[in-house]
Image (cartoon, rainbow, N blue to C red; front, side):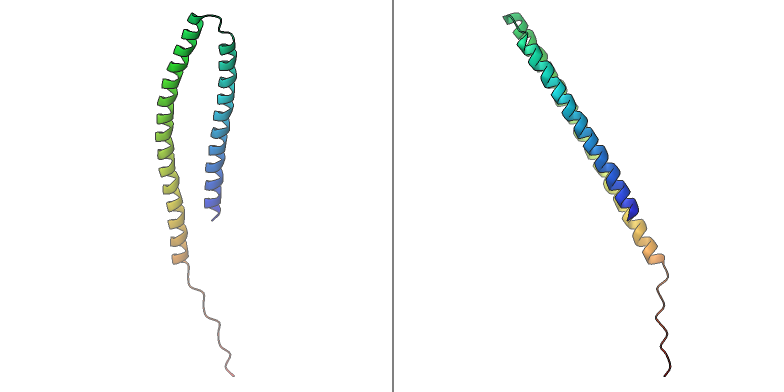
Length: 107
């Protein structure tokens, strides 16, 4: 049971840290985008901004696809490890000697 708790703690901690980093990155990107948008003074600058955002969107889609694939692989590995822990626990319980019945007092 302790192994399962440690695995879950490590897995969820990693997931939360990744989510926190992604949120912080998105906030920084949004701030930079707003600043860049606010500095647009003409049509050419606007066109360049839109083009850049379009390219970034394509790159983000590709990154999300890669992240989804990585997450699926990570989930498979997690569940395989959970299964191994549960099988190990089951096997150790099955291999343990059965407790002896208490001796009855002869009266």
